[in-house]
Every structure is written in structure tokens, then in C-alpha cells.
Image (cartoon, rainbow, N blue to C red):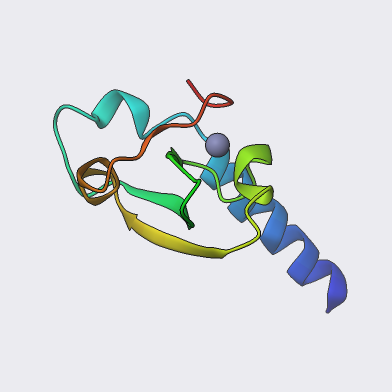
Length: 80
Ligand SMILES: [Zn+2]
């Protein structure tokens, strides 16, 4: 059972890291990204497992990319 969940998380990590969303930026605003909700955070992340996002010691929120941009977030330096 444990190996099942392990492989499931590996698959979902792969999907999160797949370079699919970037090219769709101009055609859709419904791409979900992750932001760290804190006064100092200014980056949004495509990958929930991103190094930059893991530095977040506050609340992590999943929002649409347009929402992240409206709130003043820009693309994470690890993912550009
Ligand atoms: Zn990132």
C-alpha cells in the first residue's frame, strides 16, 4: 500500500514539474500557481515542490496565474 502512495506522489510531482503551463500563459488565465502569502514573498511558482516555494515559512496558497500577477507576484527565478 505504501509503495502505491509513493508512486502516486512521484507521478503527481512529475505532472507538477512538466513544462506545460508556461507556453499557455498568453492563451489562458486559469493556470494554477503557488504563492507564499507573506509580506516579503513576491514570486509565484508553477511547481509546488520548487526550492523557492519551500523557503516559504508562511501560508502557501494555490491561485490562478492572473490572480498572482494582480497581487504583484512575478515568476520565480528558479523556474524562468
Ligand atoms: Zn519557484
